[in-house]
Length: 68
Image (tube, rainbow, N blue to C red; front, side):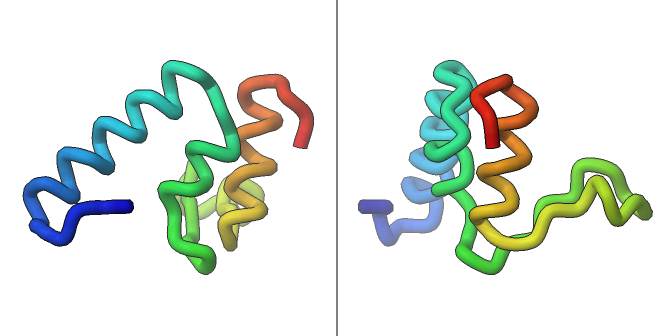
């Protein structure tokens, strides 16, 4: 569970992102986002915009070659 102190929470989030990136784990990366998050890989390109945690996870899975 994330800490409630904003500085501690920010540090934990960055550390978890680092672990998710290092392991190339799409589920772990997607879990960092809100269920209704919008991830924009390429601004002004609808195909580079992913809406919702499931779409973000699928995008990362394609990027790291685990399916999706």
